[in-house]
Image 1 (tube, helix red, strand yellow):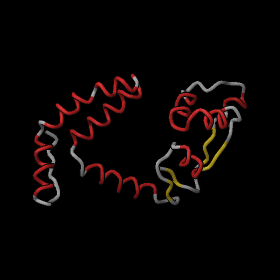
Image 2 (cartoon, helix red, strand yellow):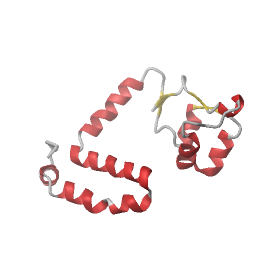
Image 3 (cartoon, rainbow, N blue to C red):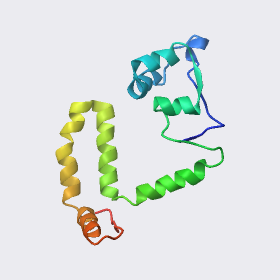
Length: 139
């Protein structure tokens, strides 16, 4: 998330005689595709928050000054989810980034085992059937 009025994004290394040493070449290609990555990286382009949103570098653009309130809203939404499930999703997504697609698919049985037999899963099903908000315990 980024505030529209404040954000400028740039990869200026090529204008200073450097390659991108921080991994921007990987992140750009992963998130924005080869064409967009080369368009911005090779030109040492600077762009605004709306372009960053279109490229997938940020998920939301909010008015300046609203960032903290919106971040807290998002955190509250995430905290309504089962902690075990959130942890497993995040862990498996990290496996994808570090080891690739096939490794991430191989994680599915472990994800299922860690969540489907949990008290949180039972609570999630019960809350759905009873049409009430779930009270997850992280177990």
